[in-house]
Image (cartoon, rainbow, N blue to C red; front, top):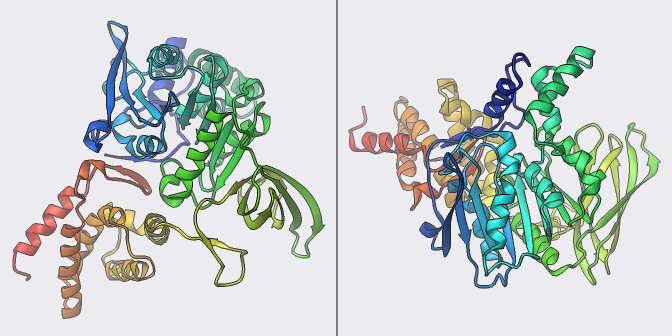
Length: 505
């Protein structure tokens, strides 16, 4: 199962005809249930209760209540995005479970095994029935329920945090703007007709009071905003605008080198799980978790940029590594590292544009001195994060190879570059599994080369493809130009097996 991580939906229709027809068009374009079903909590060895909430004869909500013996009533409700289902959420609910929380994972109408036609109205307005079901469980503390939303799930999580009773905290990743999507749909050019079309479409298709920035001042639970540096500009702007307006205790983490979910789980492997887990733990305990960052203009630079000083205040005694992430008004991001002393730190940053919002984290990963002497420290990445970073520069050529668009003359160069990347950062088994079809395709091409050395290399790549198959293919996940769920590389690997069994020509 692959799906494009493209948040900027292009909606090819005009606001014509009845409102009901327009509403259906919007819902169909935005909400795209994927086919297939891959993994359940039981296959991962987790204790989980399946549930079904019958909304009416033609609609239901289905999911799992993943139980933790260490939860003591602390429960996280996970709202997935508009293009996935529960069967691919295991990278999220496993790390949340491992940190001692019950986790509720469910599919809205028309997704996964839930009955009904998916609509934006139902996506939001079915949530009270879900939360009533969760609060009724004897192992749930109704006062200690938190929400974790991704994409359109983040829009829903923010709405629920504001309107649906006690909420201990809310995590928002890939938060988008329904209003901005409507404007794109109607190609709103600022004219009176454009404004009328936008208003009609928003009124007819969107749930009431769901625009994140509008509701943010009235939302009070502690909130953690996760903004990927490489996400779409539209969604990053929605997150920054909402963060700035948010009425409660808030934290912003700008994730370096990170695209849309689930890329943060890989690019920031280890750090991601620790930051989210720590935020939720503190939110359930009622501990103030925000690290405030104040940005002040310091001096102009001769290259036309501006020096700013970031002052960080964090509730942490002792000496800690601090990473400051700044979202700039021009849509880019900037980062700086420093050390805090008893909860306070200062660092200068040269910025190309004014800061729109800033956040800081106490780095949880192990850090070491920067061997280049440029930074005060560098985090030590996990093998998975290191593999992700090594493969990233080759991503476009890898996708071209998979799509049959890589010229034959560039096959050997890609094979050489993969080998060089792995020499710098040995590929994690998950990365090798993701590249199994790439090894197979390159192996087939090199096996046909006239040079004996290249033919031997082709055989080695075919063998590597076969050896890279994961133990449980259904559990495989990888965020690339397309996010991989399951193991679509199967056919390419089987072709590699056949080629190895046949004598080389």
